[in-house]
Length: 595
Image (cartoon, rainbow, N blue to C red; front, side, top):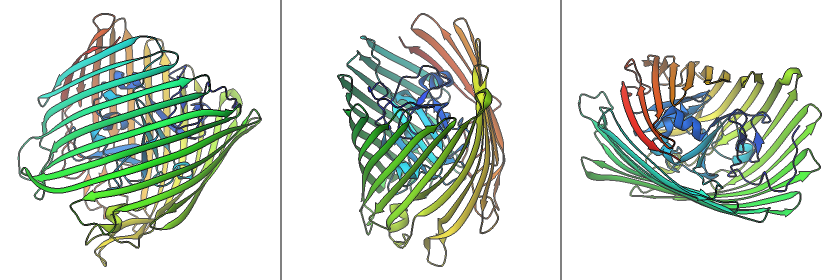
């Protein structure tokens, strides 16, 4: 049974609040309900990737670690730094909402976020909520929400530096540095990183060359508490990427992902916590052919969110909020419309009645393009014997068309309506020794999917899909051993043709095992995905694949360590998108200083 009381020790007011977790097995999460709750309390399917998980994995960029998440598949157009897409629970790659410290990010023209440009050295933790969340966040959250929290200083009273240097395959070099600190009243973190790699030949097109990538990133996060009930925070993240690839119209790109945000949270009364959040995100892309400028697509997204959490008695919480979003496009391509705004209002009620937990939420969005759209969800949890938990939920969601789909010259269709979904989910979970297990079964139906219509030479709402799936998850800690694993079984069906939706594997398995032996830690990760089709007609099939990664870390001294990782040990040659090669066997060695 949850308890909602507000000396703001929990600061329930905002989705960007990062509460300290008492245990890695039961972390505090905020994305599923936009309020703080522990993992064993949530009625949603959530995966938390902590800073410890990131460092243990020795992953470099965001797509590398996201593919460990149950129900999530990463499709890449080549190796490190090349364009990557995320398919969550079999929905489209633009059906996942991405937040950075509570600010919505992504390209307004493409409708997706550039996951490949996000360096993990700037990340404190990641929360992945699987299942519809439009009733809280609006458009895009059909498959779920991924929220990335940048690194945050701790209240130790000390200023702590950190740095690491890495070298690896394909003439890869990486350097990270940071400075963080704080006390009982405030905190700060500053981080910088740089990466260069010669890369691989990303595409089978008869041209044999290496396609390199470089990345430069900077993050800053500062905050201060005022008394016991108020807090202000500022955060900024910028990541610049340069990528080479194979193409006849363009073969180089320069990109910049940037997000700036501010949040003020305060207790208006003992039972009422209010939060105001302002943010702006940029997605900039300049494209070239052999060094000659070809195109520019820059988008700016402004966000304003006002959220109020009101404790009703001991076990009930009412959340009321208003959201505003404005997207702008700046391009050398002449779009018919270059600005669009959306206004949203939402309400959520959480209550506990004995062994029963209930959450109901409603939201209405007024979009400048297609008018008003309403979504809702209802979730129920029941505490069984032996700490078992039964959950069931139903939710609706939608995805607004992107600027490219609506207004791209000679292609866009201004008559497009939003894609709509409805999802039903049942789950069972419980403890197992020093770990937990969970099984979730879901059925998602998506109507009016946007697809190319040859009769109008552009996109139209002509496709419908049904996606059924099962996810099983197990985590276990036993002495010096740490194990986690998940299995996903998926049936992603295009209802119109009966074919599989493209680029979705029907089966995926992830196993991770780590062992601490004094100053030495050893680990291994096995990832398997079945075959998939690259096109909607199911005429082009991509083989399944498996990769085995090995890693080791040794503590040279109290604050010094050396790390080594070999990815894809058996050099499996595979593709997740037709004609685009994935990395073969690679090796990275790192020297790190971390107090």
